[in-house]
Image (cartoon, rainbow, N blue to C red; front, side):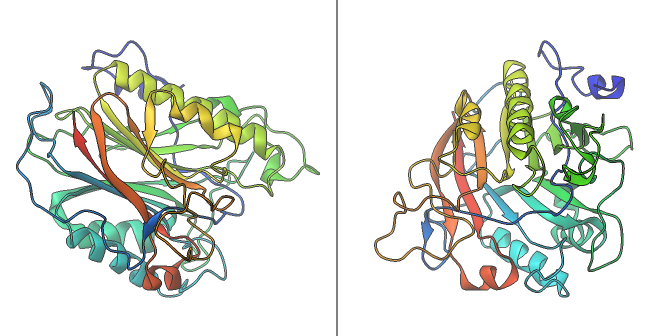
Amino acid sequence: MKASARRYRKGTTARKSYAVGAAVAAVLLASTACGPGVADGSAKEASTDEPVAKAAQGARGVPSRFAVLTWNICGAIKDCPSDRKPKKKIDEIVKVVRSDPGYAVIMMQEACKSIHSDELADQLGDGWVVRHRTATKVGTREKVRCPASGNKDAGVAVAMKKLPGSKFVTGSDGKPGWNLTFSSTRGLEHAHGDSDQSMSNHATQGAACLQDKGNRLLACTSHFVHNDVAKYKEIQKASVKDLHRTTKDWQNGGYRTIVGGDFNIDVEGKRIKPLYAGNFEADSNDKCNTTGPRPRGPVGCRHVFGDKVDYVFFSDRGWKLRGGGVRYNGSTKKLSDHWMLTATVRPS
């Protein structure tokens, strides 16, 4: 772990810092999704602008209703829906966020900085901060190119609302947030994810993070490798290990954590299970698909497995789930091959 990463932990009571990681997916950014959901894409709860809850000392700005969304926008590979209309994807996110004042965290995967993350920052305005991490192709130092713009800036992004008392920690680039790498993937990655090519000593997987020191909040998003990458199971397992270790470390430091994204791991897979230790997932009860066809029949998708690869995890300590599920909204599916996954919690 770089020395600069350790500086982000100063001023907290946690014992040490771990490499969380920055935007991931590298070579061939994947697509899949899942979730329980509301047929018309509306929130499961009524939207209410509730007063700030004094949930914990040092976190007076955390609202009593806290909403999160994650979405693989399918904006960084060829032949994505509406890949030549990047603004429409961001318009869809902002429309959802503006419909509910409770939204405080947004996560995007397969996003390009110049045409997606920067656009999100512009539309959200001064009341939010946005952190983008450009992905590096598996086992290399080569940044991932965005087909729609031609720029080498494809990756993931996380946004957080400025709450009362917010104090965002800046990275080595002087901007809010920071990028860390999952060090446990080192030694597992073939160059470009191809088993025919040599193994490298690069660790490319990770997450983009925002740290609100004032309210003791940490939000990170990641995009794990997909099953076309050599040793993908081992790399995913290592990524889960580092992400879980990071959440535990920050939680021990008194932080409420929110981590999520496109993990490319089926909900039934054993590789995802370590993240449930000390955390709960937004859609644990239904486990609906986030990439496949919209479920038919009664609301509730416990019988639908195989296509849930998108997750939002909250720390057990500090949060209580109010509702969560996949937004089965037709306009969303026209813009990506993933559905949005949303959740609301309250501080405890």
